[in-house]
Length: 414
Image 1: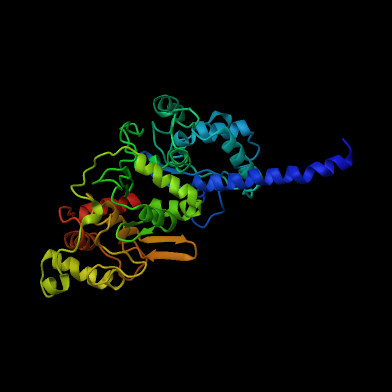
Image 2: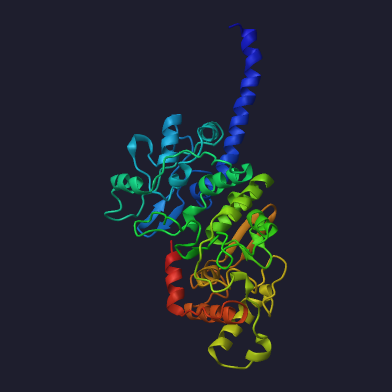
């Protein structure tokens, strides 16, 4: 081939490569790779993010194209790690890396992801941190048996007569966004429970709620616009707000999805079979029961103690009657205060909220005993204010004590 011919082909070839890299960048965003593989304050994709599990803390690995990351991986080795949980040299990955969801990623999308991580991600020479997983869970060969039970190696394909929007939504929810990793309850062997997909699950100190189409426990009472706002900004008025791992998912992933992909996710979630949960009425249906200022001022009851803490630490943002203000959500008609458990309410008070969408940063300080905050609260204080909020604005049948708060705080500890 002549030099002229090479020069004629190269620009087109480069453009094709760039298209593939750009596609891979979008897919990596949809797969939320950054949230887990970038430690707070660390280099992108260099690993070191701590993932607390029932068997110990697992630190995410370096997936930059360096000698300590995935530099030198062939496309086949990359695919085997992403889709089947087997790293180079046969090392078995733990399923905190959601390869059971990524197993469905198509060959074309794997090609694009490989191109992006190989050619567009900056290499970082950073050694991986040692996990704190104890015996016998540190024996990785055991993952062979776990995979035999829970890993479906089938690549994604459309179902017969499935509408195109549902096809795309299913691929995003079940595979790329791996929503079931958090929202599907687990068996005693930490595998997903069949028939309970997306019906809600404990996630350390947090609770990933039911996002099926169930009218009481799920998202049937959320409008398409509610869901759209939530996925794009982390906030849906009179419905809910993203904190903890979901705030990370919104910040790093869903806010950057195209409008078509957001709508496809919503359409598919409407299509997911309803699974009944523990809620007796929809989480967002609870309204204010009494006017606390009128009924509790000057009293010494437990509820009055909670009101005093609320008045001093919470009312400036959430307002005296819990109606919220601007970015600060209302405490009535709120999926956190109306839930069948107080887990997300307590953990939000302990850990606070910080997420950035677009040019907007939403912030709530952490009030836990170890928080660097002037109004940090004891476990009993947090129990008192939580019970006040639940009785006044949310689900009054849910009440907690200081030991419940202490347990959530221990689950948050690094």
